[in-house]
Image (cartoon, rainbow, N blue to C red):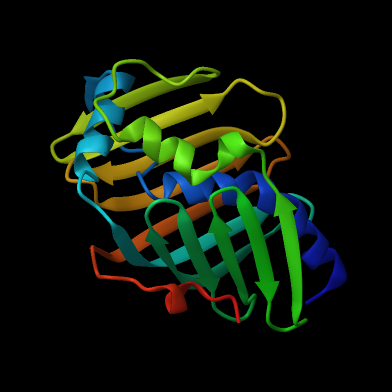
Length: 215
């Protein structure tokens, strides 16, 4: 992999990947004109859709626009998740990588370079916290974000704007009201944009530890 390309991808990992890890569990993106839906109702739909889920797998297509490279990188891959807080993502060539998040410990493995990259995350960005938040009916919105929600039939949209000046600028999620993820769009403060489409999502398939190995 080109050094500049590797550097740009690495810089954007911490912002977009962490958001992906959380929101790939619950859904995000945009739809046309729809009925108003309060953010609280949108989050509650997500919670109910994933009630009783112990694990899931899905195929993904990722389109990443890196502002430094002025080009779009398209790749395919697969994600896996298992409660209480283990997430795995494998991206196929031409930009192969494997990512493992266990609570707030994030490691990325690049097969072509046979190298590992550890990305420190604050405890509040671990998956355990978010599942604790979504384990019971939602009565209050998370602090530090602006949210908008819409619904059109069984299709829902949740748009989230963190109020910090670093990392993610806006998240838009597509999901169905039964919890099936459709698409995630992540726009970062540095101009990078990541669009991830989910296919063939399967819940409660009985994933084991061997399916979360980096090598």
